Length: 142
Ligand code: FES
Image (cartoon, rainbow, N blue to C red):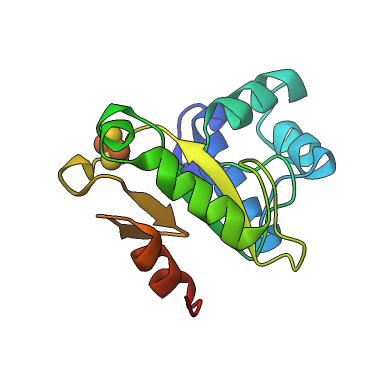
């Protein structure tokens, strides 16, 4: 993939996403290998990886929930949704459920403000969230 770019470093996000597609996260070892392939320092590549919030630098669960924490979602009840998710999953934001099924992470606006509060479950967008919708999405009986 780096051969498609004049500067190999331009492929860094694509390369990180490729690694993540195989391993679900980017370990220090894999980051170092990608950095070497792209003639980048590990620190520079780590800077990109940690800035880009869809690259995971720690292991995550089988599914990742990104709950929006921007203004429209806050106004429309994001905190109640967050509390319900934490209760149902038995975790706090930034953590993974004990069964390894879900990781809960905050994210900036995901462009679904007209259906706030909103979240991404893996690549799927969900809006108009409340406790009932969360339970339905997660397949939990109330
Ligand atoms: S503020 Fe949450 S989707 Fe835009």
